[in-house]
Length: 419
Image 1: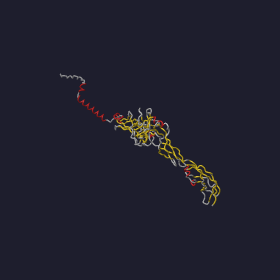
Image 2: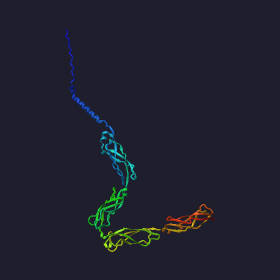
Image 3: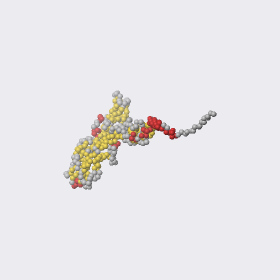
Image 4: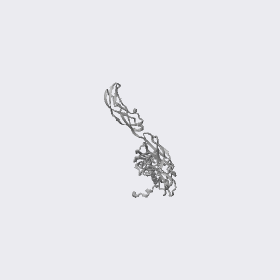
């Protein structure tokens, strides 16, 4: 009998998860690290995204270099910008990386009216560009810088001590030069140096800053004064021994015929004198030495002495300048020129009735006195007329320094006949 082989069924074996994970673990870890490194390298080598973004802030506009002899009259303010570039670079831009400047190309500083100039903005990072500026322009106005001399005036901040008064102040130097925008310089009403008296009745000498003020007494800004400081000296005088009186001129002689004195001025108009109180109380004026005006026919200024009584002197020794203004006297003069007939044909002659006219001229007497009858022409125009009797208007021509007032008679009768 044959033996029968019996086949036993195999049992199913479940895979072990731990074995799957740990099988070749070092090799798997190495492969994972290599994959991560490749991913990082790929991410770094990829081109960043380009973005266009408004900058979160305002950029102040730098003041431009102003042409010589001009000053810029404008508030530049700030601008907003829109940037374009790689997203990381755009995100890193700060206000300090941006610079806004004014392009003065085509701007004429000599023009008085405002002019619009473009604003240019640059970025420190060359990979980032500016695609928009708002506002794109700024209004500029330039003004010419001028320099002008001014005399320095003294301003007393307070009064001297009781029983005294201030004498004539002196300033060194007497003039300063003021430089600044033309509109500011034109507002200057005075240039002042201020001094203050102390408690004692002593003469003062102080250094004082110079200030330019307008008509209301307000200081004017934006000016340069050279020198900026002056030396002011003011004598402090006892009130009882000084007195200020006007200067009175004394004239002698007669001006040239046909001229008259229109006005007379003295410089200074008044002076301060000192002396004994009883002498000063009797004086209400001081006279100049005699000024001779004989025969003058134009304005004349003469330096003469101021006459002082015994026991009287001037605080500030000086002569007087006496200016005598002379002008021609206006008047009239009568002339009787013969009537001349013009425009006659060569074969004709003419007679006028009356043969002359009376012409009255007005003007300066010296100019009228210098005229002769030949300087005044009386004519009638007989152009195109033949023999006969006609009435013509008389035309009078006089020198330019005289005016025709009247012509009598204004018309004449002219008889034209053949030769």
